[in-house]
Image (tube, rainbow, N blue to C red; front, side, top):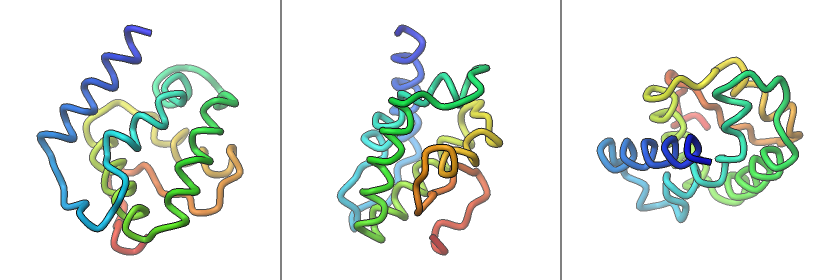
Length: 117
């Protein structure tokens, strides 16, 4: 649990430093990151498949992204910043939408153009 807390604390710090204009969105970056903490083992370590808790979290975030274009862009920008700052396995991150059966699939990618999401 200590690693999880340290990862979340580091992400929260990056979010505060990097900032962002998410005024049109209801979801904040630290909330989006907190939702996907169950995916830490899949995204940062050797777990070959996401856990049920991870997929549940991804599906919840997908519902938020589906409901609002502002939230969708905010989530995209958030994960774009996180992908630049942490050793996330980007190949595994790209598989989350398919493995967790979600439709919107906000990418976790440092090079994604969030204005096109």
